[in-house]
Length: 182
Image 1 (cartoon, helix red, strand yellow):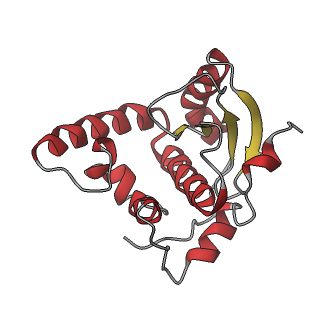
Image 2 (cartoon, helix red, strand yellow):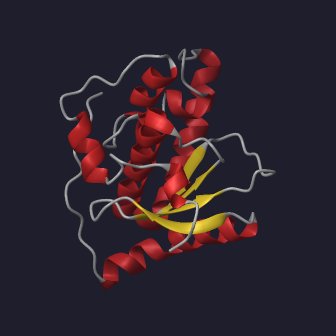
């Protein structure tokens, strides 16, 4: 799958209302688990809030987007892989721009179906929730395939790579720069 440069997004009162249920869930989860934040991340093409999960709090994921709220494990968003992971999570916020309150239920359903398909035919280098999920691999600007390549020790080779990072506002992203709220 090729990387895609995100296009500008609309924003207005109706759009914010459309997004508010899922964003409230994301902020609620962040507060419930005692995450640090919010810290602004992204760009006008994919604005989001970033929350750092407490050290003692461990889930099975490294980072997750709940609407325009991104929760991440400490240390997970470091270095080159961290920039690409943040770009991937910001890609999910763009899916949320379109799907609004349908985003979380649809993504959950597709993750469950992917897990079922993975029981019959696993995909090396992919978790069961990523392997067959089109919201992870096809319908976003930074497909999970690129993160799997990084985890396998390969570089991301795409003519749009640096432009994608710039458009998402993460070309200079560093988790350490977000450790103190504005």
